Amino acid sequence: MHAFDVLGEPVRRRILELLADGETSSGVVCTVIQDEFGISQPAVSQHLKVLRDSGFATVRPEGARRLYTVRSEPLRDVDAWLDRFRCFWTPPLEALATELARGKAERRLRDSDEDENQRRTP
Image 1 (cartoon, helix red, strand yellow):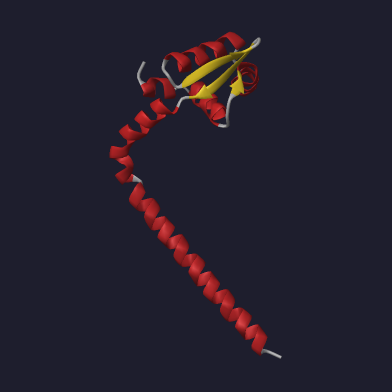
Image 2 (cartoon, helix red, strand yellow; image 1 turned 135 degrees about the vertical axis):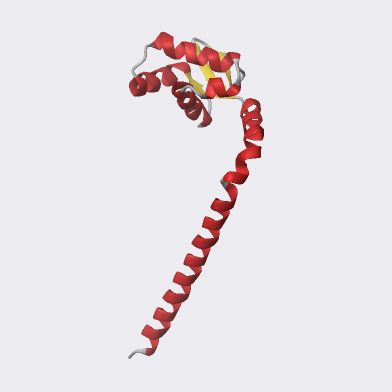
């Protein structure tokens, strides 16, 4: 299954978001996903299986529990593929960062001028 087929499913994206916070039990994943998406436990298990089979997640048994984690390699592959498209959003974001920095500098200058004027006024 292609990475974007895996990531195209909102439930699987949400599961990966949960796993990005650290190792998470299948029980916790099921509870959150069932609450948010209203799907059955077997359906959640199937999504976890797709994530495992496609290499996006690993599972580690711990007694009766199953602990899931994200695997970074497939995400790096997705990031590498997206790299050719970054030019469409990187320059506007860099321009935004420049404007934000300019605004902060102007506010600091204005605030320091106001502070100076307040010190001079008896």
